[in-house]
Image (tube, rainbow, N blue to C red; front, top):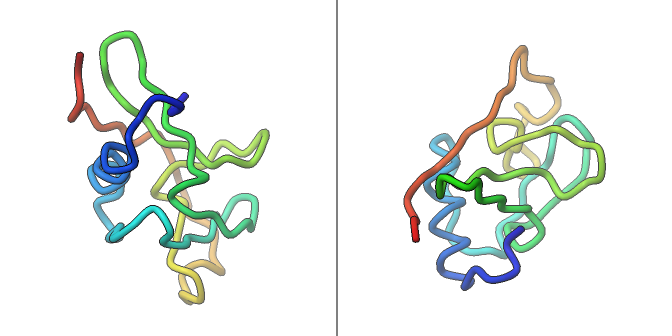
Length: 95
């Protein structure tokens, strides 16, 4: 998980993973359209695979959402479910 990431590293991963919305801080809020939970950047789970690629996931147990499923709080788009969703990965940190 993300237990050994510095806050600025986690923010950079969120920024690279979410090309549609800006992340200014880990305190920014998003609404997950799959589980209807309001989450912050601090709560989002970051997973690094053996190849060094990071992926971000909703912190709600059992929720399969990724950054493309998260919308700004109060955004009209958050009321509609996306037609498709998949993983969005960022490999900006390796080593």
